[in-house]
Image: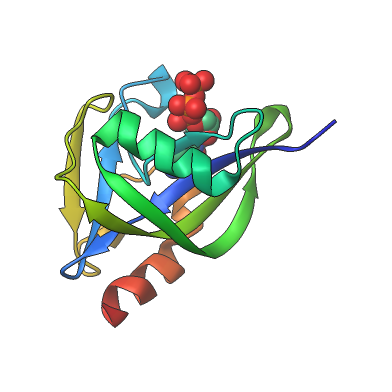
Length: 130
Ligand code: 523
C-alpha cells in the first residue's frame, strides 16, 4: 500500500508567514496550521498543494523545496511542508475560520496544531531570511 501524503505550505510574504485557523475536527478547532491537505490519487504532492491552496484560499501558488521533518500521522499518513511561493491572488478563508500573517517574533506564541510545531525552527529561519 502506498504511504498517503498530506502536504502543507509555508508561504512567506514581507517577513510574515501565512497561517490558517482550522474549523475541524473538534480537537484541532481554533488552532492554526500551514494550509494544505491530502494528496489525491494521480496527483503529485506539489499538484495537490496547488489545488488545495486554490480551493481553500483562492490563491495561485508554486511549491518549492521541502522543509523540516516528515511527520507521521495516524492511518499511515505522513505530513510534509514545502516552502511555497504566492504567485497571485489575496488569500481568503474559504474553508478555514480565519487566516493571518505572523512574524518570526510572533510565531512561538501562536496556537499551532501540534504537528506543525515540529517545523518551528525551519519556519523561523525562513522568516528571518526573508
Ligand atoms: N494536518 C496537520 N497539519 C497541517 C495540515 C494541512 C494537515 O497536522 N498543516 C493533519 C490534519 C489531519 C490530516 O493532516 O489529521 C489531513 O489534513 P486535512 O484534514 O487538512 O486534509 P484534507 O482537507 O485533504 O482532508 P479532508 O477533510 O478529508 O478532505
